[in-house]
Length: 139
Image 1 (tube, rainbow, N blue to C red):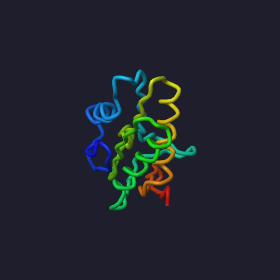
Image 2 (cartoon, one colour):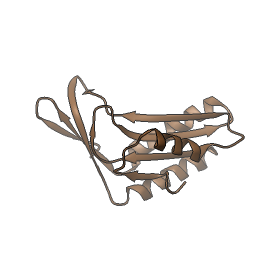
Image 3 (cartoon, rainbow, N blue to C red):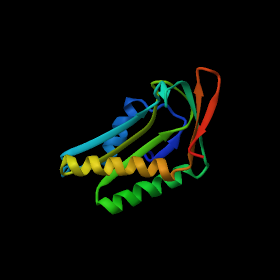
């Protein structure tokens, strides 16, 4: 799982999504919930052209701690990979997954994991708008 739980400049394609899912899969888990955070073309009614993510050098270590904490709190298997750098509309910025015996617990754990990642992992994004303006989010 060490290679899966990371912050990277690599494109988060379907192979990465499958690797994150495989990291949480287990024979006793009948539910695997995967979340893919995708760059959208608007925010608050403003047209977005792209995002630039900046990551602190310790971001992977913090992501690992967040995954460990959510796993400990829920008793479930979780994993995530977050991308940084320049992303265009449609690019995947985050892949997170959780598995459980049943879907409700897996959905709840995946949601908790994503919220914790957004709140705790030192990654910031700069949104580029079609009017030429930009805005930092998460500072």
